[in-house]
Amino acid sequence: MTDARTPMQRMLAGELYRADDAEIQAAQADTRDWLVRYNAALGMTPAQRHSLLVERLGAAGEGSEIRPPFHCDYGFNVHLGRGVFLNFDCVILDVVRVEIGDGTQIGPAVQIYTADHPRDPAIRRDGWEFGKPVRIGRNVWIGGGAILLPGVSVGDDALIGAGSVVTRDVPAGATVAGNPARIVSKGA
Image (tube, rainbow, N blue to C red; front, side, top):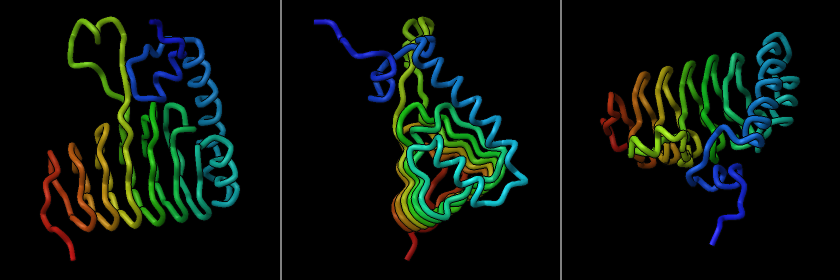
């Protein structure tokens, strides 16, 4: 039995795909064009920039803001709740869904990765990759320079210290810090 799905459909499902597919390359090109416009919009009002976010992102809740420069692979896999704030120079590799809950604040130069690669070097050498979704809850604070790896979930009200590398799920209300990030407080 053959898989009749396109590489894009396999990518969005978090399965192995090759990024050199024409449809995937076209989506990346469209996003690059949008990023040129968005990253030139620093002088615009937050409301004007929000209108640009609505053009490309999967969701951009009321009052959500991303300060340029911003970088992503596709944009349409990024879902922002209401009042979400991303500071300057954030990167989201969104080959699959990234969900950021209401009121979450993300510091400058934070990186969120969904893109992953096979551990088998032969498969990796042939250009295959896959994605694992990232979910960030409501009212989370992520300090500048933090990195969230593919597949992690961050619970509501959690805090992630600046420069932390989040390799596993963060419980609701917990504070994590370090590389790899470890729980330093379980919260209230």
